[in-house]
Image 1 (cartoon, rainbow, N blue to C red):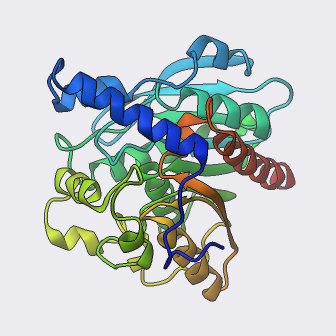
Image 2 (cartoon, rainbow, N blue to C red):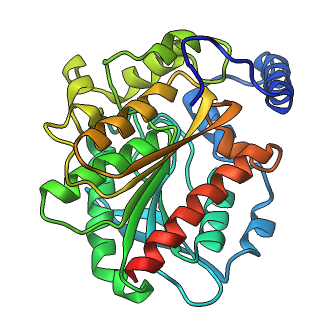
Length: 318
């Protein structure tokens, strides 16, 4: 694994992408208001045409599934051929933005390459719905999915990126503590897992690498109710009384990311508790690089890595 105590430089393609985004945002700042609604509209866009992404799977079904207070918008991706299991996918976005569209292409690729159905859910966003609303939405959806999993061969996995990866890790702990459903695997891409507990990568990559520590603090302000929430395992899974008995974890990480050491640290803690956890870091990448898979080979490689892990585990249990 890269040593996060010495900053590494993003790769050429990543630097070009960051430069282009900075130019675009600077140019648009004087044209459009920078409101939460504006942010959500801009960031719920895919990096690749949705229609072309949909060609990779047999069916894309817009549907609704139970959440905490009612039905949530969701999207089901059904791959070609025999389906082996189902994956509940939670999108990233700091609990504040992104949605079904921003992660459409990622879910299409996960479904095609894993051979599993993928259910992406549009959980309630902050600050209108603060912690633990998103957790309770996802838990309700998982309970519902457990009753439908036989349609897809039986095994269930959870997956997500960034805040969605946090939610997936939280669901794995809740399923263990509440007597099910049994989960085959948790696939976590650059998740936030430590809350207030510090790690070296937060200082090393504090600024200039897409996700800054200042931006992380802003997201937390939108989501949490009180500072005590930062020690709640439903927001910071590392604070769980035990990490034993969890489903195997596959954790994909960006090297130049304040959250990098949270992923490696969580995997190590799971291993110390007797569990299975593996990590892989893509050198020269920054937080959120999966969303730019159309331009970054590392994004495509990371999706493939996770999908193949799902394929192995779900087929073995199906």
